[in-house]
Image (cartoon, rainbow, N blue to C red; front, side, top):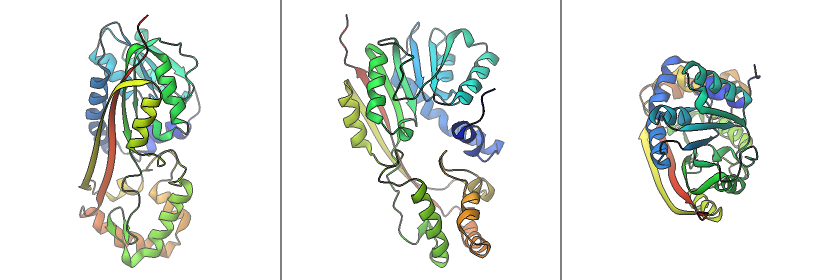
Length: 294
């Protein structure tokens, strides 16, 4: 069995704090994203889908279940996640329609030129330093007229908060503790250089075109909403992404016990009263390979 890594640890547990109720809620939230990505891939019988950064197989399994004649290539940098997806495929009696390849998005060398009909990603390029190289690889492996369909968060949107705000909450009375937590996050993921934050939707559009794709369509969506999460334990025991600690871990790392107690006493009631504001942006992008038919 492949050892757990930061990707499998986060995807299979830390993103929902090990809470089954939170996992169900997360799956329900991801289902419409999966369906839109697959709609953009326009899959047909006997075609092959390459799901880059497949994770636990959300997109690829969605394709296999929706299109009985489609085959799927599961690609990920995590051997542990590929092993997990392989077991899920075996349990669902789908192994004969699956292939599993350990590879990074920017180096898909195990996959031949012009060998797949569609490429999908969901929240993958945000972890890739060399996004241009990844998009060139997507274009290389696609057959002439092949389709690219992606969902990517635009995390730089709403990143900068007012000094007295944390999670969209007023933290004026505990500003020093809030600033320590913000500083830790910034040190772990500097917005100027971290691949999760150093691009926006215009950069992504430019890179897709530069990689050789044509007929590009992008839906840019912004959401500013009240938190729907009121369970304090669910909030503080989740890690925002694979590179960051849970908020409980973060507080233990940078706050004194007194600061932690004061911060929780001030913030927790606001969370439980749904006073938090979530600011997020993302894109759904669809494009076609510009390679000419032979």
